[in-house]
Image (cartoon, rainbow, N blue to C red; front, side, top):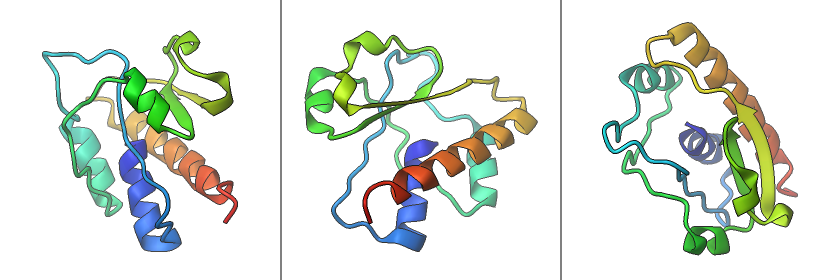
Length: 122
């Protein structure tokens, strides 16, 4: 969600050409390699589309590539990440059927992404 929101805000409001974003996970659930339909629907209502659902795992190559690492989830062991690159948001995960909480989480992530973009020293 955060990647899709960043890309949407960047495209529609900020146009930051020198910034790239990649989404990745710590633990990939091989039985559920998709974004829930409810998330697609709610983001779609806001005009935001998730472009690439193909999950990738966080690895050393990705950590080295990143200038900044934003941990969105609230259940991640932070010891694997360089502290000088790390920003932690601790957004709770909810079941895909709980659309009310998904809306709240999307709103929370939108606020945090907007603040993050504004702090990129525009």
